[in-house]
Length: 428
Image 1 (spheres, rainbow, N blue to C red):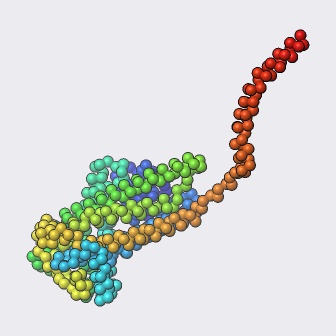
Image 2 (spheres, helix red, strand yellow):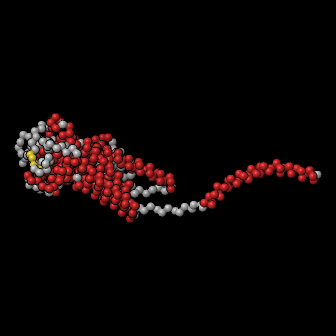
Image 3 (cartoon, rainbow, N blue to C red):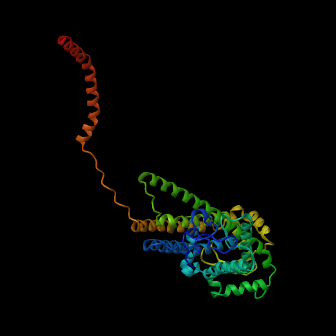
């Protein structure tokens, strides 16, 4: 990705542009981007370039590592809990999931928590490729800003929905790889999920059972899920960034009014708000859409003869056997048979996931503040010439002495006038 400067003006609507908030001035920032689209801005001197490179490396590396690598074991546990419809333990709190996590690691090893990570990353890449191809073949804009017209925003959301529709069979096969038990099947290759996705799309190589839902019944829930998640993330992200900038501007105004100098923007203020906004947006979207995700994953797994780990014990495996007719039937069956809490199976894994991400975010904040102090050390304060105590006392007494002298002069004025008159009469 080519580097761009902060002063570069955005292109006209409908053309391709970068979606990073770090590349545009506040009045033209794009709130419909993500930290993966960030690029390092060009700077005028070596110090600015070092700050830009440092912030870019810390911000992007921390976000990618937290969202795609560090979170994957908890995503595996969450999905297995969601499709485990006969499980006694719902694992709605992190306390019960920790015991199962220890048992899985003891009997199957650490690799059992990292299954399907390649397919998850590749499915995200497929979504990006779909968006690029659709935007090139159609007038639908790939990226928009807050200054774009409502029509452009709707077209952009339509682009997102179409990309999810095209990726539905691959998302379903990727979900199967993350939930199937390692002890019951061979480890899949890096491109097996693509073959299985194409097979499910064409009806080849998949179990011919009446319980397997066709792809066309999954595309609409998948698109709604993806677009809803995108809207929630970007709305929360825009709100957080706006709050951060308003607070930062107030602090700048206060510092400018005190010393008369405009305070330089620190590395922390440049990059950390972006990370915090992404974290808040992803957290809010996962919480609000958790029931929809539970239903969708059960529809993905139905009829695939998948065997998952028994998360009641963490030792043995169990098969998945459901018979839902569609999205609404699945939702209604979960509520009637398992209760509303059945829609939140595995919510404890989500809590652990974001607790770990919050810890990494706290560490990144410390690193940003530390580097900001090293690169921008505070200027030494000029010595203040404070008067001595004796000088202060003399300054305080001067007004009092002047007042006393004026009173004495006023009292002596009549006597002085009388003496002058007597002297003049004697001379005459």
